[in-house]
Length: 293
Length: 285
Image 1 (cartoon, rainbow over the protein chains, first blue to last red):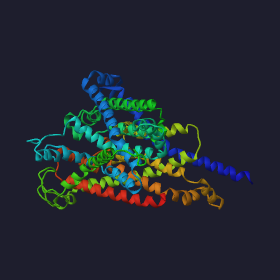
Image 2: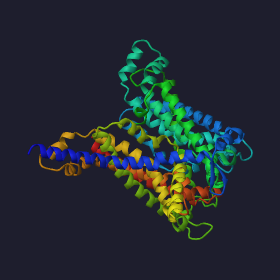
Image 3: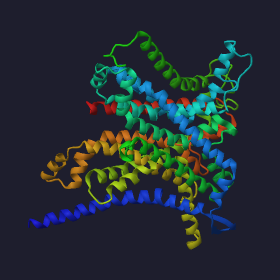
Image 4: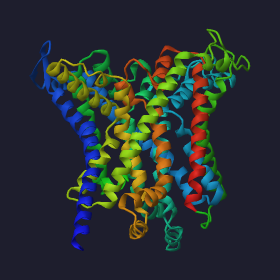
C-alpha cells in the first residue's frame, strides 16, 4: 500500500521531467543548433550548376583574398571594441553617481530616466540622431546661428556619426549592470579604503573596480555583441560607406542571393564574436553563466 | 567620492555637470524626434515652419497623416500580431524552462543551461540568417521528397515569429527563473499535504507567486518583439512589420509622418513601462 503511491509518484515525476525537457530541446535543437550546423554546411559548398553543389572552401578563400571583405571585417571588429570601451568610460561615472552618490528618490528617478530612451525602438533613436546631424539638421543650424560656421555642415555619413549612434544605442546595456554591481558595494569598504590612507584613484582601482568587475564584464560583452551585430545604426548613420560586416552578410543573402558566401560570412562573424567574448572572460577570470545571468 | 567622504567643491560641481550633460545627450534625440512631428514642413528638418497636427491627422498626400496612412497602420497591426504570438509562446516555454532548471536535477544540466544562454550571444542578424538557411533547406527537402511547397518555411511572418521567439525565450527564462528561485517550496508541499495534486499545487500556489515575473517578462518580450529589427530583417516576407516599414521609408527619405509614428511608439512604450512599474512595486515591498 505504501510503496504503490510513491511508485506512481515517481513515474509521474519522471513523466513531468520529460515533459519539461522536450520543449527546451525542441527549441534549442530546431531554432539554434540545427540552423547553425546547416549554415556551416552551406558555407562549405560551392554551386557548380543549378542545384548542383560541391564541397569546397572557396567561400572562405574568397573572404581572405578579397581585401574589401577582409577590411570590412577588421574595421567592424575594431570599431566595435572602440565603441564598447567608450561606452564603458562614459557610463561608469554616471553609474557610480547613481549607485553611490545619490540616495532615495532621486536615485530611483535618475535610474528610471536612464532606462526610458531604451524603451523606445532603436530605429527611433537613430532617427533622432539623423535629424540632429544631417546637413539641414539641428546641430548644423545651431552652429550657423552661433556664427561658428557660415554654411550648412554635413555631420552624417561618417565614422564619428556611426560611433555616436552606437554608443548611444548601447548605453543602457552598460549602465544597468554597472549600477547593479556598484549598488551592492558596501560604502564602508570605500570609507575603510580612505581611512587606511588610500587616494581616490587608489580606492577606485583596488576596491571599486574589482568589485564591479562582473558588471563591467557583462556590460562589455553585451555591448560588444550588440555593436558587432548591429545593422541599423551603421547603415543609417554611415550611409553608403559605412562598411559594416553585417551589411556584407545582408548584401550576400538578400541582394546577391549568394547564400553560400553569406553563410561563410555569418560563421566568420560568429567565430569572431565568440572569440572576443571568450578572451574577455579569460582575461578577467569570469564565468560565462555568472556574467550572463 | 561618496557623500560620507569630503571632496572639493570643484570636484562635486564638475561631476554634477558631467551627469547633467549625460542626460542631455540621452534625451535630446528623442525630444528632437517628437518636436519635428509638429513641424509644418515636408521634411523632418529645419527651418521651423510653425505648429501643425497634419502629420497625425492630415488626410491627403503630400501631408498624409499617420492615422490615414494605411500602409503604416497595417504594419503596426502586423507588428502587434507577431508580438502577441511571440510573447505568449516565449512565456509558456520560459516557464517550463524555469521549472526545469530550478527544480530538476539531471546530467548535463549545466551544459543545457549554457546552451540556453547561447541565443543571447548570437548576433541577431546571424540568428536570422541561420534560421533562414535551415528553414529553406527543410522546405526544399519537402518539395523534392513530397512535391509539397511548405509555405510557412519561406520568408514571412511565421519565420519572423520563430526567429524572435528563439532569443526572447532566453530573456524570459532568466526573468522567471530568478523569481522561481525565491519561491519557498514548502508552500507547494503544504498544498500537496492538504490533498492537492502536484499540478493543482503549481497552478494555485506557485503560478500566482510567479505572476509579477510573468507580467514583467511579458512586457519585455512584447517590446523586444515589437522593436526587433535585425532578426526580422532577414526573415521578413511581403508583410512588413513596423520597424521594417519605417526603415524602408527612412532610406527613401521620408516625411515627418515617421516622427509621428515615433511619438506614438514613445507614448506606447512609456505606458507599458509605467504599467509594469506600478504592478511590480507592491510585490517588492
